[in-house]
Image 1 (cartoon, one colour):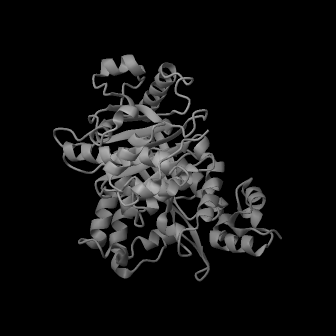
Image 2: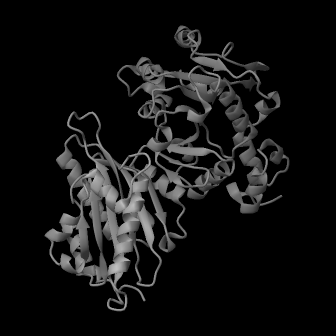
Image 3: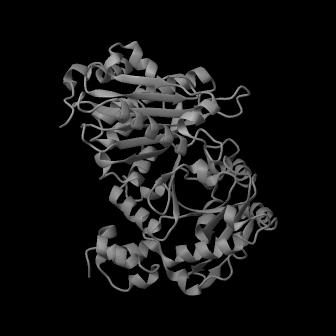
Length: 478
C-alpha cells in the first residue's frame, strides 16, 4: 500500500516554500515529528504558518539544554552535540516513539517520518561561522522499512538570524524532496537549494540509505555536490561511504596525492608508500594522527569534455578497493587545496607529486587571476607547515632521470625555486623503483580500450582483474 499523493499539477505554479509545506500538510497520510536543536524550530515553523499542520505534525521538540537533551537521546562519548551520531540518535528515538504511540490498526494508511537537525550557528565573536547536521527518516508506505537522507551543512552568512532562515528553507526542501522527489535523487539534491543563494550555505556531505535508495551510490551523489557548486570538496572512505571532511582532517597530519588514477597504477602506489615513509619520519608526525588522501580534481574528471559518471565510478571503486580515502575537489591549483586543508589543521602537510606536475606549478599563467600572481599563490601554499615530496621522472629527450636537482624551469623561476628547495620545502623520493618510471596512466588506458595485453603488470594486485570483470574504462576484452 503506497501513499496517495495529491495531484502535483496544482502545485506546479506555486514552487514556493509555503506551497511545499502546504502540500505536505494537506496529505492526510504523512505524519511525523520535528526535532531541532541549536537554531530554533526553523523548519517546523514553516509548516505551522501555512495551516493544516495538525494532521501532519505529531510533535515538535527543541531540547536545548544539554542535560535535558542527554536525558532524551543519551549522552555522547565525545561530549559533542553537532555530530552525525547525535542526528542518528535523534531520528531513531523519534521514530521509535511514533511507532509506539500511534497504533497502526487505528491509522492503517499513515506513513511516518522524523525530521531532525542539530546545529551550531555563528558565535557572538563571529569567529566560527557555524555548521550543522540535518536529516529525515521516512517511509512512503505504511509497511515499508525506513529510508533516510542525512546531510552536513556549513553556514556562510555572518548573522545568526540569516543562518536560521536558510536552515528553515533547506529543511522544508528536504522534507518535500523526501516524499515527492525520492525517485529522482539527483533532482532532489538540486532542489535542496530552491529559494536559497548558493553562497549562503554549503552542503559538504550527504548520504542516502534505505530501500528507496538501494540503487543510489553515495559516491556519485558526492560528485553531484561538486558539479552543482554546492561545495568545493567531498570525501569518501574505502567502503564507499561519504564522510565529513572536518571529522577526518581535524588536527591531523595530512599527506595528499593528486592524480587522474585512470587507472591507478604501480607508480601511484609506489609514490604513496615512499612519500608516506618519509612523511612519517618528519618531526611531530605521528602515524595514528596521520591521514592520507588520494585527490581527484574536477578538471581531471573532465579530461574528455563533460564528466563521465561511469568513468568516475571506475576510478573511485578501484581506489576504494585498495583501501584509500578519496577526495574529489574543485581545486585546480595546488595552493587552493593547501588552503582548504589548512582550515582543519595546523599540523604537518605534505603533497606527493611527480616532477612534471611540480614544474607546472611554476607556470605563472596559472595564477593570472590572483592580484599577487605566483608570489601570492606560493605565499598561500607554503604559509603552513607544508612540504612537497617529489617523485622522479625519466626524460626521454635527455635520457636521464629528473629530480629536484636537475629539473628545468623558466630562467625567471630558478632563484624563486631555489628559495623553497634550500629551505627544505622540497624533498626527493630517492628509494623509488626505477622500472615504474616508464608507466603512464594514459598509455595503460589506451591499451585497455584497444584490448591489448601486457598492461596488467603495470597495475597493483587485483586491479586488472576488477577492470576485466566489471568492464571498466571501456574494456572489451582481448
